[in-house]
Image 1: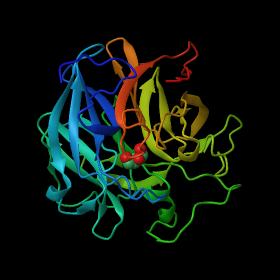
Image 2: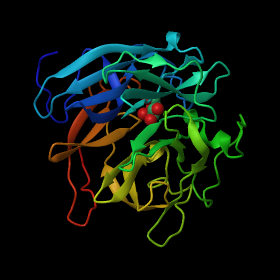
Image 3: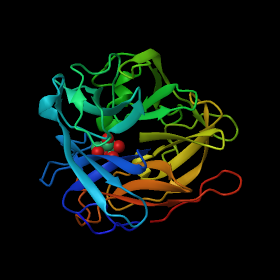
Length: 324
Ligand code: FUB
């Protein structure tokens, strides 16, 4: 593909892509998306329609450059522990190695999170034989802090199975908290030095309002649903995520990567399609939001396209809401 990409246009149109995790590696923006398949699936709250099998890596040089599709970098058939549904991935760089973190259902139909490695940001990636011990649910997002510590954030409701882990083990018919109870937060774990395992137990992140009270499960405009992303701006940690049923991307701020995070507001209004999923990255002097919608497929929830747009901060560190 040689056509320059424009803000709010699909990065590529020859395949469907979703759930973009963008990072600057080797002077370019690399995007690690899900690869939506162009086939018809039964659609349900379990997410069976998102039956992805592999990952491609994309890259752009910046505003107005063409997008390069580096091709398939990992396929489910090459991951011994994974059965199906290669959902939203993320990537990180450390130890002269590129790490691809990805969720999939294991052979017991339980979502787990695996790692694959490469010497290049464009892959191909070689998977570890087993998933990360103690990992569960979906949507891994890895943040490498200035002090070298790495954190993995993950978790998603409904098809992502987060509510089934409230006791610490998998309870297949467990439901989420009642409307007036605190909402479930995303999970965070510190990653080991080699990035292949958790350092200590994963723990739930608390998201609170400006009065210090937890956001409640019934507060669907603000409560956590899936798709966490953490970035740092002016010394503060920004946790952004999808509210799922209300289709917003919102954010909360903390002085500590482990939280608690205080809710701030909306980053992205609802897009065409049920899901919304994003990442935030700085490239040169500007900040960018990568997101997806279903415009290219005419609104098919499971056939999405990755786009980007500029993200702007106000002087007080709050983020201006984007209405794409
Ligand atoms: O792409 C499959 C799932 O849809 C992702 O894991 C969620 O974040 C949602 O975008």
